[in-house]
Picture: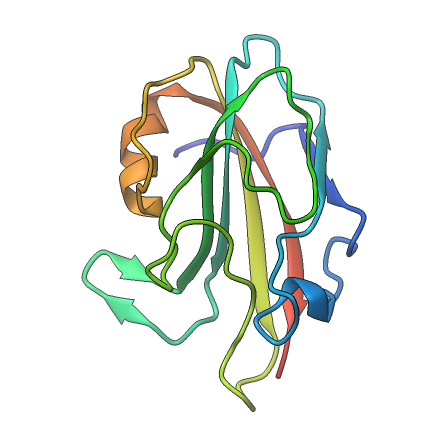
Length: 157
């Protein structure tokens, strides 16, 4: 996606941008997704997709890096928030090989990891099958992304 971050703002009631993700939203806690909300979507936004990715994870394979914790899409333009632990909308597959959210669980002693919650606004409502990986989703929606921004949280074990 070859454009700069947009004016959309993504926030969470659970943590501030750059702040620590609370234990309930990690693999050491209840492992539920944090509540998220957004504003400033561009005119023409027809749907949204959300990805949580840890680029600090020491995993590299052909075409991949880091660790994907959540892939969520098919979010209608009328939605501007997600409740804690949501199971709404279309769930993709994370790198735990499961659909839905899988919270932070970096290797012990590996230092702080940064978790990028990416919100992408699309100019259409593409018909996408459930269970896409992050890379499959990005390949399918890339021509329709009209804005994006992120919220970054940290976690360390």
